[in-house]
Amino acid sequence: MVFKPSLVQGKKPIIQKRLGDKLKTMIFTEENAANIAVKNIDTPKEKEEQFVLCDEEIKQLAKWCITIEQHYDKPMDIEWAKDGLLKKIFILQARPETVQSIKNTQIINEFQLLTKGEVITSGQAVGNKVAFGKARILYSPKDADKLNEGEIVVTELTSPDWDPILKNSAAIITNKGGRTSHASIVARELGVPAIVGCGDATEKITEGEMITVSCCEGETGFVYKGKLDFKETELDFSNIRKPESTEVMLIAGDPDKAFKLSFYPNDGVGLMRIEFIINHFIGVHPMALVKFNELKEVAIKQKIEALTNNAVNKEQYFVDRLAEGVATIAAAFYPKEVIVRMSDFKTNEYANLLGGKNFEPIEENPMIGFRGASRYYNPLYKEGFRLECEAMKIVREEMGLTNVKLMIPFCRTVEEGRKVIEVMKSYGLKQGQNNLEIYMMAEIPSNVIQAEDFAEIFDGFSIGSNDLTQLTLGIDRDSAIIADLFDEQNKSALMMIAMAIDNAKKANAKIGLCGQAPSDIPSFAEFLIYHNIDSISFNPDALLAGINNMNAAEKKLMLSQLTK
Image (cartoon, rainbow, N blue to C red; front, top):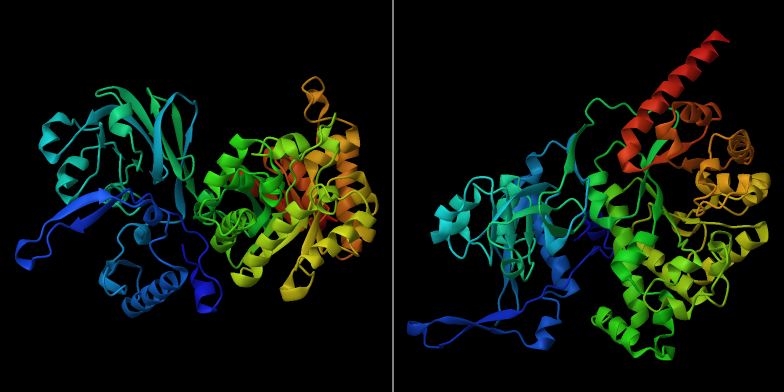
């Protein structure tokens, strides 16, 4: 995945790349030109573990693609090949792209599974839909008569001679292939979900059984046993009007969903949580990579070795994967602001990462323990924070995604804030350099009371209403026994939020809020806009309700001012 603006600017444009399986290699069996045949052999291990193209070749190919698009003045579907003898890349053909470019980006269909079932197999998801039907295991186009309309094709691999069959299918599942395989292309054109590269679909799925194909859960698609309930929602953004005085921002964390979310009405990302990337795309505790040679458990070391096999070194694995994830979201929303919150795992959550138990203390109450800013300068985690900072530096400076701003969570004191800023500077993230802004989560009463002092250190604030409410009311959000006492509309909690906004305004610092309440409760949105908050960040599923509440609040405020 190549980001065009970075390519044009001469920055590092490759924001994502994945190593394919390459299990088989096709070779000539005869060198005699009059009698040429081919056969498939097992790919040597060292070739399997190599990328097909080096970064310079990817950039060259991308530049040619831009030239071709500019020549035809439209999105193009471009095919290329690398010659095995000359080692040079050639463009084979270019034709108008006929699926993505004709989509109405103002109307989005959302799919959501309402129940989860037994997973039969999984692979790469194509599209974002869900479908169910009887499975038909087909081995060649000659089996066409076995498929009834609305059933699901399960096969090894498809080719153009499968097209008449696939038109009758509700979904496609293949053992082999990737996102650019024939099955993937046809699925996009037909508008049906496909799961490709499963490896074992024809073995695991039983002929004639009812299955559900889910492509709505990210890059990985799942085949479930039986018919699962799901919900389809059509979102029409064509008549949505954003508020005039308050920015509408999103809460995001999953790079796989970034480009789809970028078409929602928004002013950027007000809170990007990197915990999702660390959990799902990295999976290893950063200190287990820094101190890999000190690990004692053989099984854990073997798992880490397998994950980091293609990395330059163990630490670089973490840095590159985190940079890729953040860059994907930043590129999707570019040039809008994307505020990235540095890691805010609690010790019990960090311990669940691979190798994590070796580096995390056991705490009675992790919610108010060793978390957020306190970790970043502490010897127990400082080197792990260095890896986070190195990833952010790559995104901003090497990739040119300067729309990324950074945010520090759970900063208890002004002195702690200064320490963190200095640590970040020592790791190459100097506030103000290359327009770097560093924000702070306002989620502790001390943040509110001393907002003007914190504003001398940080460029702005984002109110974390959940933590601020729990610490104002003395409630542990993890406790089910007193969960009913948690209320963001409690008078004390509202007074804290109002004070945070007012104090930030006195210091001329930008301030927003991220949380569910403004979308669920119209009066809460009204309260925030009355206090002149700069932005409100919403979870994507609550965005439209939140915008409606904000518009109603702005209208009510305007009428009250006219009356006065």
